[in-house]
Image 1 (cartoon, rainbow over the protein chains, first blue to last red):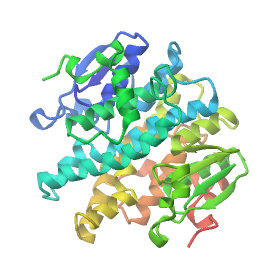
Image 2: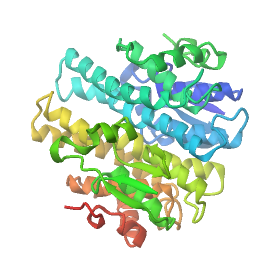
Image 3: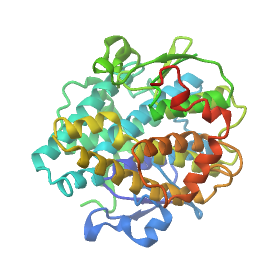
Length: 212
Length: 212
């Protein structure tokens, strides 16, 4: 398997966590999102991933885009260790945590959006930072309440699940933009616990071959 | 089952399609997102759905948020008719279509974002419309290429799948904002085909009890 990844991309970070938790070896193909206009916009990469986003996962020529779809694929093909609970409602609950991050929090603060704010809309750096913090605060307020429903050591009880693979990279991202975290004790605790696991620590941006 | 829904919400529209395709009866609880500051912000509703978003699904007291998590839940509990293919890669491909809509296209143009543009950022209506069209054009260009890989009558061959339940409401939404569609022949065809099915037509905004 080959993962097209960028060290700082939190969507890539999610899939790296899942690959590590399942102990699946993979090749790392770095896609530099910033240098020289962005390697994600080359015709060769767009042929793999029409959205021009990372990650992409190439499993022996079969290429997937979208981190959540990749995680579900890896869970179906490599069910151990299970990253979704057995009970149908609990499985859906874990997915709802993933989706709150992947649909409600992350997309609004993605690189392409921030570039549009300071480019075409000519907003200031202060307005961009206020934008970023606003959506993190709104999203994390909801995420804290949702996760607190079932949290133990990790988001859903005492075993890591797909929920942690989505929550941890988003918290890493928020920390990079210096978002206040004091109102989210459950999220903070889960982040600290998860980052003690080698699967998470080795998936973190600083541990990637393209880290700067 | 009870669905908390708003007629124009495309995320609600997705779940209504899936409920209809599976012929599952449900109660409709209208959450008016616009009137009187928004019924999604009341303490009672926030206790159900901390994000203050629609839809929410109440299955005998067990409440789910996030449309994709609901669709996966309904697919697991009510597997017929199947809305995900059997093959693992095809299942992931269908999910990638859903996620391209739910993560890359829809969130950026959601009501709360548009309100922030014209509220705190004091942008003009023209700038708001340009924003909306920009992200639809970027997203639909990618979606057209992705869907064309496997499209038949519907997104994935000749049977409706979860992919159609996500693509169709997004196209309905884009039409409401008068987005040009001539560059997306596959998406247009799928929309027309799907809307011939009663499950889709009866899930459309105009057919809801709270339609205006």
